[in-house]
Length: 385
Image 1 (tube, one colour):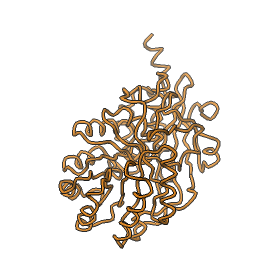
Image 2 (cartoon, helix red, strand yellow):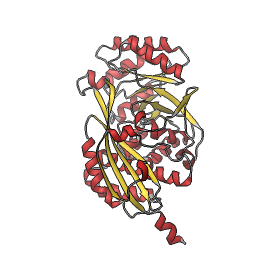
Image 3 (cartoon, rainbow, N blue to C red):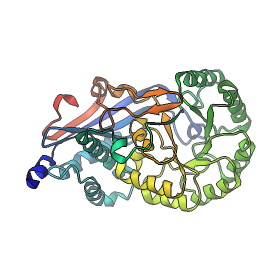
C-alpha cells in the first residue's frame, strides 16, 4: 500500500517556459535617475509546470528584470531532469538537492531564481493535491492581507499623473500607496510626497521607496525630513547589503525602515535582521529560491516581531502573508495579471486569498503567446494547465 502511494507521488513530467511580458509604459525609479539603470520595459519569467504520476499539475514561476531571462531558462533546462522520478511531496529535499547541484554558481543569484520556479510549482502541486489554497495548507491566520499599490507612482510620472493614479487606486479599494523618491533634487521629492498625501488624504497609508540610491548622509538627512509625516515605511534608503547602515538609520527614526527585496538567501536576511536594519522585512520568494526558504524567513521575521511586506509578485506572496501571524502587506502590481486566467479580489483595503487550491492560478493564452522558449520532459501537462 505504501509503495503504491509513493509511485503516485513520483514526478513524471516537467514543462518549462520562458515568457517575456512587456510593460504598457517603461518604468523609472531612482536607479534610472542616477544613471545606474535603464527604464524597465518588460518582466522576464521562467514558468515551471510539474506533473505527478496521477496527472495532477503544479504551476510555479520566477522572474528577472532587465537581464537574465534566457540564462534562467537554460539553467532550468539543464537541471530539470534531476527532478524526474523524485517524490513530489519531498519539497525541502528536492530544494536541497538542486541547491547543492548548482552550488558552484553561488548560494543565491541565478541558481536560486531557477530553484524558485521548481519549488513554487511543487508547493502548488502539494496544495492542489490537498484541495486547499496554499495559505490554508501552511496554516492561514486570515483570509486576506493589506494591499498597497506601487504602480503609477514611478519617477517618470508627473505630479498630476501620480495624483490621479493614487486616487484611482484608493477608489478601487487598495489600502496604501507607495511612491518612488531619490531624485537629484530632494525638494522635488518633497513636493511629490506632499502632492500624493494631499490626493489620498490622511487615512490611507503612504510609503516611499528610494531604491538604494542614497548615501548614508543623504539617507539620514532626507529620512529625518519626513520622519514626522506618518509614513508607513521608508524603503531601501541605502544599498541593500549595507546592513550596519540600515541598522544605524533605523535606530534614529520613528518611521519603520523597510528593506530585503534584493537579498538572495536566508543567510542575508538573517544578517540584515541581526543588524536591526529592517522593521519591515521585504523578502522576494523568487529571489531567495521559492516558498521553502521563504518559510524560514517568515519564521525569522516572526521571532523578531517584524512586519512582513514581500516584494512584487502578489500572485505568490499573498498566500504566505495570509499565513503570517501578524498583519503584513502585499504589493500590488498589475504587470503579470494577463498571464493568468484568474484575478485576485481587492476590496476594503485588502487583497483576498482565492478559494481555489494551490496558488489558484492557471497560465493563460496570453502567457502561451508570450512564450519565447519552451521544453517538455517526460509526461506533458494536460490542457496547458
